[in-house]
Image (cartoon, rainbow, N blue to C red):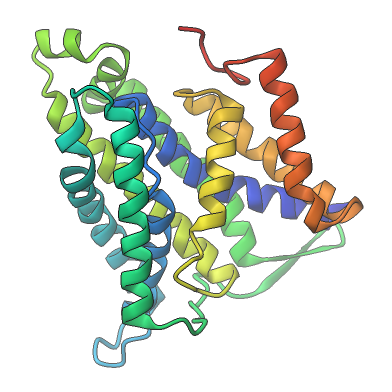
Length: 287
């Protein structure tokens, strides 16, 4: 039972990080960024590039820092290229879906061209194993379990106790009213995409330390994040976090007792049941 719970907590933590960025963009702009999985992959590869570069002589710590900085910039660039041209125009939601899907495919193929399709190994941030109640836990797994609540807790504090965070919430509720009180909606959109990309990049680094790197590594986490966001409730950060851990636990238990190939079926059945009972998700608000 212990290993199953640990597996569920690790998966839930990683899904929470990925889905939080997706939920943040939806809450502020009302659009889905389907290039989010590609950003996750990009963050992992940037960390690997810096960490493994003999010329730079840097380690994984420098790789993580470089990844965070690069992903913040990448998020802003992605916003200006793929999202901003459609904001405020009719059919913006569908247009952004199409442009971000195309952008994600382009990024994935760009990295496939640059790095090739061979698997790459990213050093773990922390190495070793600890035994808790007879269960062996890798330090990297433990870091994921502890890091996700810390980062998401910080994000929650930012949204509730910081001027910029409060501005993000105001824009999410009513962008026109936010403009009337002097909030720069454009700046909030930029900040939102930067933070979202950083969360994706951190998720990629954590995943890269647990599994191998491949240019298509962001596809499955993106699907899981989409399920989590809908499951928890569109625009609800709390619902997204709760949904991530619920999905992680469902995955862990169903993989062990039913089989890994049936796990996606179980997830979608649970999602359908929840949406039948609560169409807005676990903590979503009816509009």
